[in-house]
Image 1 (cartoon, rainbow, N blue to C red):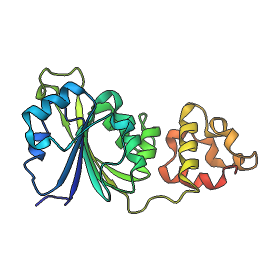
Image 2 (image 1 turned 120 degrees about the vertical axis):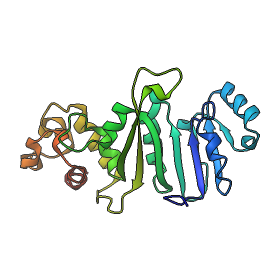
Image 3 (image 1 turned 180 degrees about the vertical axis):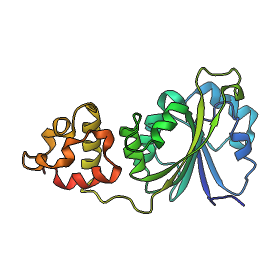
Length: 226
């Protein structure tokens, strides 16, 4: 029995099918995989006949939701676009019930970082506002052939049951991105165009962006200018 039952599964970036071949053995799920590289699509179709009607030949970042209703996303995510992949998943967060992915280790650490950590940033806050992040394990470079020059790690995202209350998601995203755009400055100087002078007198604006919890950013959205 699976630890977290699911009925619909999307794999992002199957490559040569290292993970795909095991997913196909599950049999009792609706499964689709998305790959942008035409040569890899051809390889997958030739070597995994069961994939014939399950491959989406498209750029994931430009794709539409592959299923109606709730689904899980897995993948050995392409490291050069792994952050963008997560932002795309956030657009579908109402339906994405679980994400398990392999990232470059430094990116995985950034996603899981808590306030006060030097790698805590935009990606940390935006993902953690909607998902609980679990850093599962590291993957040594010798596990691959040829070995990459970077270390890898696997993380899991599960929807939060207590998503912080915010005025709007648009305000939240704008505030977080603005705050970290000048992360070395105090919040008062970094986000001054988003708040009126009276609001900026609050002590919280003496802090830098990396010192604020996800919930702090959410609360501040209610004080932003209309």
